[in-house]
Length: 160
Image 1 (cartoon, rainbow, N blue to C red):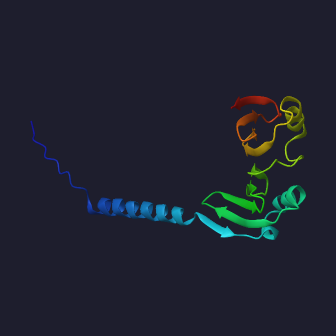
Image 2 (image 1 turned 135 degrees about the vertical axis):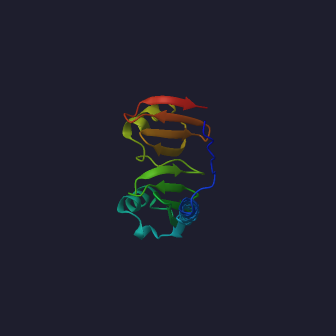
């Protein structure tokens, strides 16, 4: 039987490669954190769909703040109106969230089928918030009940 000795030390090039990888990962982490940028963007500089949405549905309200939020792979826009309404848009200017803190969502924002359902089943209720996430639409009524609709505007869930 021969006796084998093992040397647990790594070659110098391997140590340098590992150190370089650690430095690169730390650098990427710092760069990723720095990519989270928020800056003021006037409504006129937002995507046309976002501008049109605000002008059509909230034309009587003044824009208090409008900004672009950019992360590494994501860009969003947000508008806050003088009545307290907050609207979020995706990178193309499609609304993703409308929160009317102190009032009702204007008619015409929600799909017609959803609006008819709400008028029939929740007559007198005030829709205060709507959120789109993927193929789902969540609608909040009277700041307490949340209804979820699928891509075909069918009610698929609720939470009170």
